[in-house]
Length: 72
Image (cartoon, rainbow, N blue to C red; front, side, top):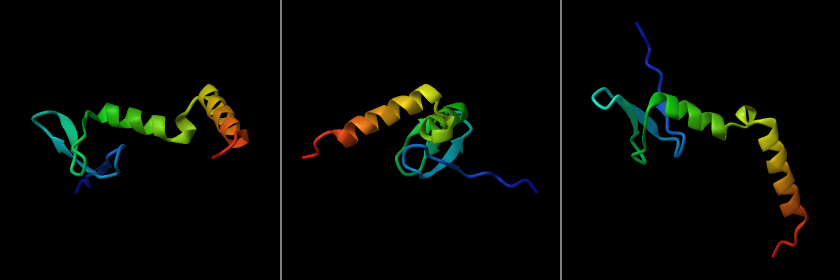
């Protein structure tokens, strides 16, 4: 018996269901509709280990700038 993998929305974390007519996944919570490869791409952008070294350095520099600034 093959077990289906549950796919979660990269935006809100809701469960996504596959529509074979559209050949796309739709989130039950927020209604976001994406193809499988788009879901994977969005996850990679949101997961720290998939970010490029340049992107990590830029984010670190921005955070440091914010941290050292006056916070009102």
